[in-house]
Amino acid sequence: MKNVFIINSHTTFLSALGTIRYLKLKEETVLLLYMRNYSNSVIKHEFKVVDISDFIESFDSLYKSKIYRYISIKKIDLFIDSLIGEPFNLFCPHLLHQVWQVIYTNKLCQQMSYIQEGGIPYKEYYITNPSLRTRIRLYVSNVLYRMTNRIWHGGWYTYGTMKKQKDLHSYAIDDIFYRYLPSKNHRIMWPKINMNNVIADGSTVFVFDGFVKNGLCEEDIYINNSKRLVSTHHGIKNYIKFHPVQSDSQKQTICDFILKESIDFHILPDDVPFELILSSSNHLKVVGFGSSLLYYAYNLGHDVVCEDDWLLESSLFSNYYKRTGLLRFCDYIKLK
Image (cartoon, rainbow, N blue to C red; front, side, top):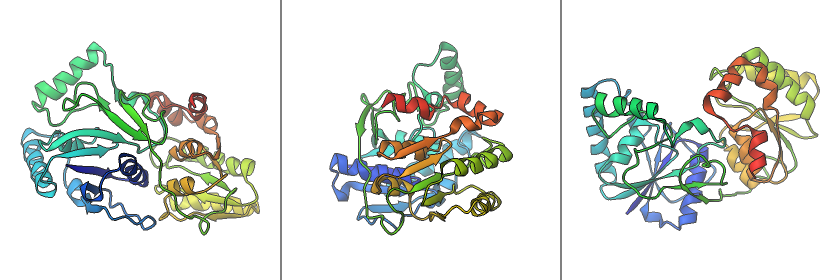
């Protein structure tokens, strides 16, 4: 029996390693499927890796037409049969992705378990107790209109779609992330390595976000509050963790302000997973506006300052909270 892990980020990579260790899976049974051209040069392992980035990206929306859906599902099934070729258990972050749905419904897949990808619980992402209206809408959309049980519209979890299994399991570093999922949750530990040459224990780390690029906050509001964040919370030794989608101009504006204020700082490299820094370091002060990294930091015993309320002046940011049912950091820590 193979154990197949979908890896699309540093977080899922670390969660996969934690799950493999927790379940004591044998090396020869593990297959890591890399997506989004994922790479990791920090942690070495002996597990088999297949990069399926190009294959996944070759598919357009499987919802667009019956013939395209039929051809695409057949291609994915042939790919899975050729790559795995035996019964397997699937581990992935959620079942919103159409291709992941096809992998789950492939005849060789025995069951699917959730592994942690983010740090923030989003209540609205889990359709666990749909109203009659929602059930009718999903039935019309998924059964009558598309006439297939291989893919479906829904959320990270959608009631009535995971018919292969009686029990549902999830693996995360705490019991809160999957609190809205009807699963038996298992607490795992991320791996640790020596980080002395990357960041000093006791440092202050400012974590910035991709809110502007992702349409979740106006740029002027985000920049002004980023400057305020640094001015208010900087320490003796400071590090900056930028988000990959932040523009160069936005990064430069923040750095110019820090230099102007004569605050000592270093920019953390993008090729070192910050999640790994958190799991391998001690007594960091992590400051930001609501990134998943703040939630990870809190779970791993660091001092966290979250000023997400500063961004509530943004209508985009306020609507983001309401739309997703996001559990704010101030509410999150009350559950610990």
